[in-house]
Length: 203
Image (spheres, rainbow, N blue to C red):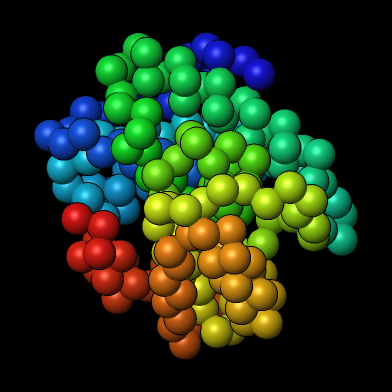
């Protein structure tokens, strides 16, 4: 794992102890979710790294195969790198490592979900927009007791089928997480209503 700050990123200090780790979707960068982060929690510190995998010129956090399926080894590698980055950022910026909430959209949300599985102590919770289950199988159940997770998906999102989301929610709950599943009638997008509801719960 690379515990340094060489990865392109933005850090904006806030007025509270909470830090939002902002993980963008495919084709975006470290600036994309700053506005969303401020709306979700105006007082939080914002830490937004760039995904380092590039697919057809678009930034992502991990590789996927030509058929759209996930390269799960790439996900694990990405999570390890992000944990190292988070450790370095915590030391550099004085972040309270016990109050980090990952906020992601699409590819970034799937990466945040994988962080919950692979490095549960790195996060206190996660807000996942347009996300799905990151791993086909989880052999070592993570201890997620006390962690809060919001999953906000559209009923017509081709990347997040409802049947799989239902299974994923049940699995997270079996690991001890407190999960709130929000559903809107759209597709692969962030709902303003879900953003407001998540913000009210989070703050």
